[in-house]
Structures are given as structure tokens and as C-alpha cells.
Amino acid sequence: MSEIVKELLYTGKAKDVYKTGNEDEVIIKFRDDITALDGGRKDTLSKKGEYNALISAKLFEILEEHGVSTQYIRLVEPNEMLTKSLEMIPLEVICRNIATGSLLRKYPFHKNQRLDPPVIQFDYKNDVYHDPMLNDSIITALKIATQEELDKIREITHVINKVLYKFLNECGLILVDFKIEFGFDKEGNIVLGDEISPDTTRLWDIETHDNFDKDIFRKGEKGVVDAYHRVVDLVLTAEEKEKWNVEKIEM
Ligand code: 5GP
Image 1 (spheres, rainbow, N blue to C red):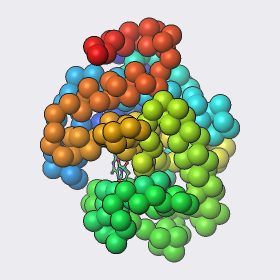
Image 2 (spheres, rainbow, N blue to C red):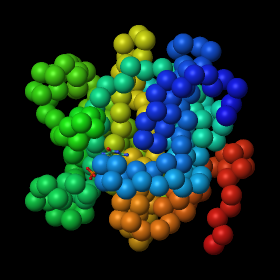
Image 3 (cartoon, protein in one colour):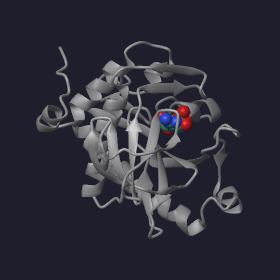
Image 4 (cartoon, helix red, strand yellow):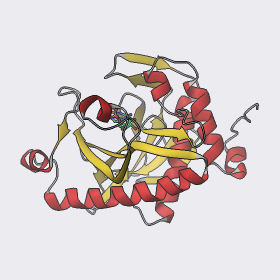
């Protein structure tokens, strides 16, 4: 643990949030825990937290370069991210480029149907209610966000999708869909928070369409951490891999 980590503020399913000496900044520690199926499947897998933090940091850096505000400041350890403190909005903003997962279970889309324009959906981040899908009217009635804030969140999500789709495509991956979360910074700006990692996205190999994401674990198959390692290998530069001592992949 780095020295700037102070008291534990919050513990989630796969990450812990710690106070630092600066009240405007928190440390997010990515743990090795992995859960799926509404908490019904759990495991602890060595290196998983580190790979997710490295991938999230890289994607946040790319987004910042394209003008998207994120809470990311820097990595202090391979599994610890120094971030701006945000008041999180309890929404899971899901963006889909290809129809798969729960979309196929709930609606008559064709398997792997291209979604253009992308589909954006809002789920309520609430374990008691099992993350139900919301609409604008329910969101504003529950005072989770105003219509103006929702419109802004949709606009930023489209930009995030465009930027990451292109970047990941150049790395040999298809960004099938992803879940992101936003919060307010102390000035009241809407800022991207949480993580963007193979835990929260579906990433397919461009050629084979093999999964490089949590679907491997959801399906009960082996090899999920090796897949995350492969994503690190594809998205980080050689210098970044050397800096964080990422093991080489044996071919
Ligand atoms: P689906 O609704 O098809 O299960 O998921 C759509 C996308 O959002 C996938 O990339 C999935 O990883 C992400 N996603 C949706 N809900 C959650 C959630 O509660 N936790 C995580 N980690 N990802 C989610």
C-alpha cells in the first residue's frame, strides 16, 4: 500500500476507496475479488485488480487527451489510483455497439446485431432493487439527476464510446459494450468516475470474436485473468509495461 492511503471510506464488490491527506482526493484500490450474477459467483484471482487498474488508467488517460473529464489523477501503485473525490450518481450508464448479453435476453434483437447509433441505457445502481433499468422520467422523479444532467451524460457517453471504440480497435479489440459511472466534482461538473476495465466492458478479439472480459467468468470458464493480462498487453505501450513490471505473455 502506498503511504498516501489513510482511512478506509468505502468498500465495494471489487474496489476500496481510501481517504488521503487531501480532502479533494481519494485513492481507489482495485482488489483481486471478482463477482458476477448479482453476487452469486465470487472468486479472488491474483493480479486481477492490478490489470483492471492499469487498463482503466490507460483508458482514462486516452479520454482526458480527447477532452473528457475523468476523476483519474495518476496511478500510485499498479493497483492503486489517485483520483479526484466525486459525489457519485447512482446510475450505471450502459452503452452498446453490438446486441449481446442482457439485451438479447430481454428484447428481440438478432445476436451480434450492429447497433448504429449505439444504444444507451440507464440502470439504477442499487443492490436492493437489483439494478433495474430506468427511464428519464423515473430518474428525474427519483431526483437522481435532472433532465439537463441526463442529456449531458448521454452526450459525454457518446464521445467516450467514439474515442474508446477507435483506440481499442487499433489495439485489435472490438468494444462491444460497456458500463460507466459519473459523479459531480466539487464545482458541480459531471465527471467520469469508477473504472473502465474488462470487468465493466465487453471486449472481443477483432478476428476471432473471442471474449477478453468478465463474460469468461460469468460463463464459469477458466482463464479470465489471462484474458485481462492480454488486454493489458494490447493497450499499454512497451514503456508503460516496463514501468509497471507487467509480465511478458508467452506465445
Ligand atoms: P449486460 O446488460 O448485457 O449484462 O451488460 C452490458 C455491459 O455493461 C457489459 O459490458 C457489462 O460488463 C456491463 N455491466 C452492466 N451492469 C454491470 C454491473 O452491474 N457491473 C459491472 N461490472 N458491469 C456491468
